[in-house]
Image (cartoon, rainbow, N blue to C red; front, side):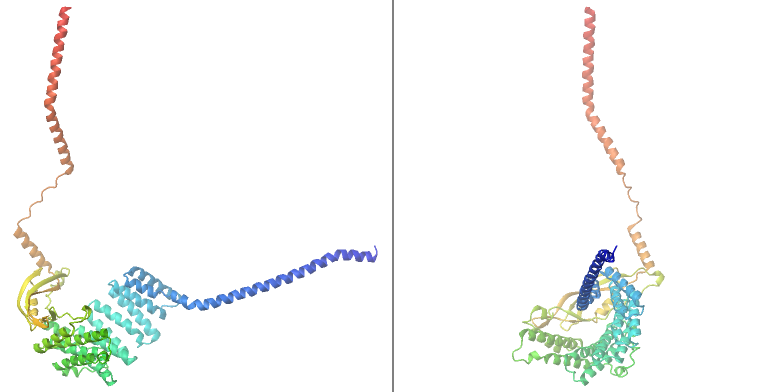
Length: 528
């Protein structure tokens, strides 16, 4: 074979290979271009997705916040579902973060509220205590963020009637506010602590807080503003409580009134203990409230809104009512009746929701009767509720006359204490057309809690049994099945007795026919 032939054969052999290589390179180039385009599209999709996620992130976070929904569940009495959700959230945060993560504070505070809603106050105190501990760890020992939690803990102690621990919590919250808060927050804390002292009959400590709070406002130019009204009213209430103690028993007064605060180091109480029986100061505080209410802007406008004027005048009437009640309590009936008549005149054209009810008598003061002495603990039965109904007439000066006992339950053990307290009662008299009138046959029901004696209850039961005689044995319960059988037998006997004459008649007829047949048969036999 020539070299040319070899060359041609070589070309015949390698030309398809060359063509295949070219096609392969082209396919590779196309695939590479397609791959680049695909990568570009993927990058574009990823970029768009990232942009969309960034825009939707706030909405997603808002939707993932479960606490508003859980709080709504608690308000709708769905406590179990809310508690389960909160406990799971707390476990998830502890697993993902730590047991001291600040994110635990909010679910713990809501869980404590749920426990209070179910009446588990002691468990709520412990839950709030953990939330307070986490707040102090993450924000500092005197962080003001812990104050709302401390207040919730104090509310739980009040619900358990543990006033001493509640007072310690209230005073600790005020101490925190005194260290690291603004004047506005400090005034709010002073008002809350002062109200707590009034609720627990500690009028001297309450007066100190209210007077110092008003001085802060006055020094900053707000002594005649609406912000001063709570402090002025609290001051007057402290003087009123001093003159008219809410408890009749002297022993209970010594135990429960005038207890000096223990954890308010920056308050000075010594001056208040020197101003005892300074009752005109309370009257001046109420008069100042009336002036503040009368200085509302709606009374000075040339073209005021009638609804706004009526609303402001209703506030003035309430301030006048407090001042009138003060005069009545301190035996100044003439001034009191003048103010009552003015209130009646001012609200004559008011809508019902703005009117003050002065048409019916209203109890202003009644010292709580002394509680019954409980028996020794081994002799105590579970606590029960008793009541006593008293009837009397209310005169124009607010005092009662003609006190009578109408009913009591279960016995008259509380009658002496209830009647003794009722003699000290003072009512706002009923106003008819702006004039005080006498209210006859007015009734008051006093309810109280007491521990019955186990021995006394047994003696009462024994005495009752002696009066009614020995107990007779109860009549035996008839056997229904036996009675049913007897009734059936009796019915059968009656049916048989009713059918007996008919059966006898049939027997007679049968015997006569048989006898006749026998005679005929005998005659036929003889003939045969």
